[in-house]
Amino acid sequence: MPTEKKTMRYIGKIQFKSDDFETTSATTVEDILELGKEGWIEYSVAKINNVEYHCFKKPKRYSSYVQNA
Image 1: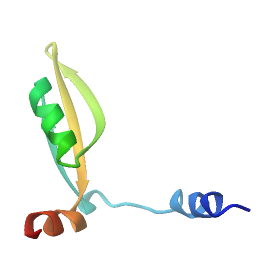
Image 2 (image 1 turned 45 degrees about the horizontal axis):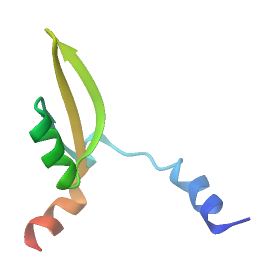
Image 3 (image 1 turned 120 degrees about the horizontal axis):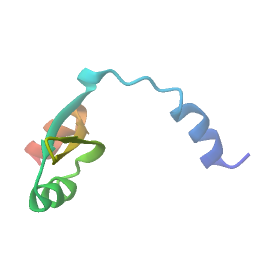
């Protein structure tokens, strides 16, 4: 079995807790693009009162590394 398939078998079993991530949101195209450049991952979009809120997350374990780099 190729290494990728072996790895994917175990990645799906990882359970992440919500406190493992930092979260933020954006409503403008500029903010959305900036968060993407900074390594944030979009995980949800909610529309409230005709405003789209794009929700992003980033693992906390990487946050301190990026800030200190």
